[in-house]
Each structure stands twice: as C-alpha cells, then as structure tokens.
Image 1 (spheres, rainbow, N blue to C red):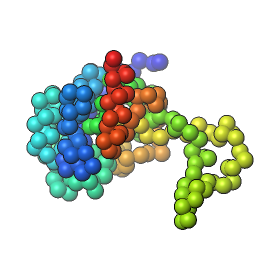
Image 2 (image 1 turned 30 degrees about the vertical axis):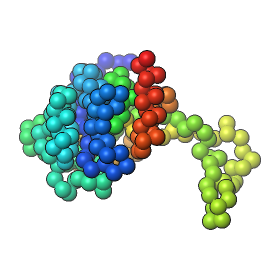
Image 3 (image 1 turned 90 degrees about the horizontal axis):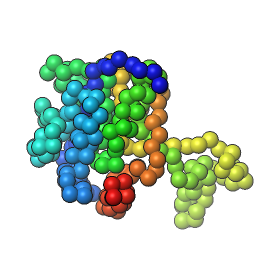
Amino acid sequence: MKVLPPQSCLAIIPARGGSKRIPDKNIKLFNGKPIIAYSIEAAKATGLFDHVVVSTDSEAIAKVAREWGAEVPFLRDDSVSGDKAGLHSVMHDALTRLSALGIHSRYACCLLATAPLMLAEDIMHGYEAIREASAQMSLSVTTFPYCIFRGLKKDDSGRAVMLSPENLTRHSQEFPEAFHDAGQFYWFDVHLFVNDPQVFFSDAVPVFLPRSRVQDIDNLEDWEQAERLYRQMHP
C-alpha cells in the first residue's frame, strides 16, 4: 500500500430528532451509553479528522453529542430536518454552513449515528480507498447472505413467485457476487460533492465488511440484534 501525504478531513454525523419507530433513537442507550457516542468515538479514534461535527435539529441530541466530544456549531434549519430530508441535502447543508464558518476540508466522511458496530480501522480503510483510487467516494458494504438473483416476492394472490423466473434453473455460482450498503460510513471528495451532491456516485469504491459486523437498525428487533453482535465483538 502506497503512503499518501495527509489531507484535511472532516467527519459529519447526521442525527435528526423525532424518530418514530424507536423514540429518541440517536441518543437511546445502547449497551450502557448513547448510541451516537459510538460513532463519535470511532471517528475520534481514527486520528484523521480536524473536526467531528454532529448535524442535528435537536437540542437534546446536540447536548449529548457535545458531552461525548463532538462539535455542534449550528442546528439544522427546517428545510433539512424531519424524515423527508435526504442524506445528500443534509451533508450539503452541513458542508456549506461549515465553509461559511471557515471550516474547510479536502475529504468528508459521513458517519451514521446508529452504527455502533463501526470500527475506526474500517473508517481508515475507507479513507485509504478513496484516495488511492482518486474516486468520488468510498462506502462500507457487505455481501448478501443469499443469492439475490434467485429472490422471491409475493404476487397479488399471496403466492410466492420468483422475482426473475428466468433464473429458476441457473445455479447460484453462475451469478456475480452481490453486495449492499452496510450503512456505516461514506467518504466524499468534498469538491466533487459540493458541485454535484449525490448520496451515491457511479465512481464509488466499496470497502467490504463481514456480515457479523453489520446490522441496520430500523426497529427494536434490529436494535436487540445489534446489541448481541456488539457483545460478541466485545466479550
């Protein structure tokens, strides 16, 4: 691996208030501490970032974020708040407002607030990946546990049918390996992102994580599974 000179880096952790399925999701205690604390600590542990910033519309989240060492230099406006605000618009808003405050960076990493299985070394691998490939972005991914090309759906009569019936007689090894967003971090080239704010670019480098360290948290069942995985990682 070639050694590249350091570049200025900025971490942004989006964390809106008003979660419906899991109340106060971003500051709910996870194995004894607010779940957002894990993302803040992972970011700081990399030693990469000049600033670790939490973008939120909630005074309660801002208070917790500051207690765990993050900066909250502003609260989001209504235009980029609520569950309809896309990640790209939240990131663009944060980068624009930080620039107005004199905070600039060559690269920015968006870390999700509910990713307690995230490791500092994975974030660092994402940084190395985007720089070595001179890519627009890098992101955490993991493989599907089953061949998605042989997936099923329920039809209008409630019966199970194949999504792609033409794949019925094909063996799973005939298909390419498929993977999905692991929902932990996204590295961006700031200059490219500000000019064309997208969550996903065609020029994206995947950073693979094992499935044992990935858990999307949308409901309480997901939350409990994430806690079990965390305890396995940290016995």
